[in-house]
Length: 361
Image (cartoon, rainbow, N blue to C red; front, side):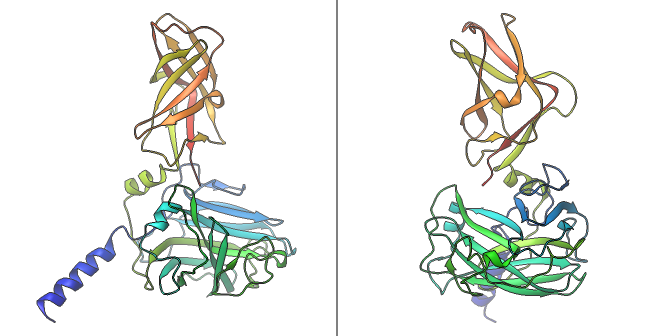
């Protein structure tokens, strides 16, 4: 091999090693909300949803992992109530921010340009499974592909999906691509589509029928970890990132601020804004995708005190976010007295207050 060829190979190998995975928290290490839930949606592992209907499924951040691959956690699903109804469904999904997939280098409108999805999966039920991609902008389109698993055996699944001229992905902060490493649908949702071909998405044509038996089987388990989506036709080794790196990426969509103990300490500077409003600057860990809302499991209260001894305590749900920048969020609270513009106000959490900031897709 010539020196030029060696240099090109070295550059290629180095490029392949970093920042290629479009999935955040694919190793399932970050779980800011908790580690187990019987409720569907974003409840445990950051950035990953589960969804189910008719059947019931418990989601968990688990320590069952493939041996020798450098993982500590997986995303576990356990079917606690089985259903074979035609309207039953179950899925694991991840939403890629539109500008990230739009600017990834994938020519998503060309059938000659592809993305490759890879992940490690294990199920207690042997058989055929299905993974799917779905766009969200313009007319939604979906594509699905099958894979097989042996019972209780880890397998690295690798699936490649081409672009299509009908796809629309906006250059914005909305949902660009929904990634389903596992999707099982009853016959109410499987009309009029074929495997490995993009088709217009509708309620009754979400994917073909894959004859999966996970949500039909009580106590069935499904584990997944090492989820990676990258541009090109080849799957490269999973891109392991540090916990701090993944946490910072996750905090663009969800973060927690506050006290985990029952104490009152000052954290927010504030100032009178109008006759009955005070604005507070809430520090955040990193810039968020959009103006956040308060998370669904808010605990504790927020209070403030002014230099003129005006004070008040109220529920965190009463805070209204009005703007954000890279370092803080401006939150407005309405009070039942006239704030004094000559005094500064300082906000604090009390009764173990925890402010959950949610800007998820």
